[in-house]
Image 1 (cartoon, rainbow, N blue to C red):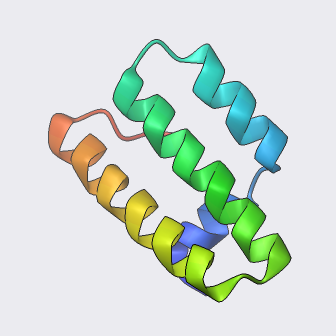
Image 2 (image 1 turned 180 degrees about the horizontal axis):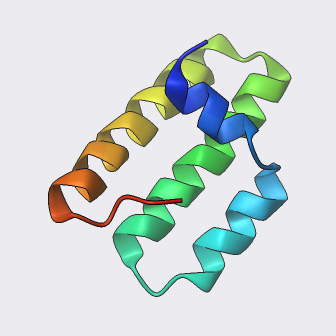
Length: 72
């Protein structure tokens, strides 16, 4: 299991949604939304969505790290 999958499954999709709505940082909100979508895809076992949201979450994580904003 990839690291991003572990992160996505560490919270429920509702919790990721709550985090996305509570942050004022748009980049972080996008990241939390990607984790929410990834968690949902993993729960459903939808391979194409898992691939899509894995890529999106990993790229958003890199973006946040580059800006010095990465932390959950």
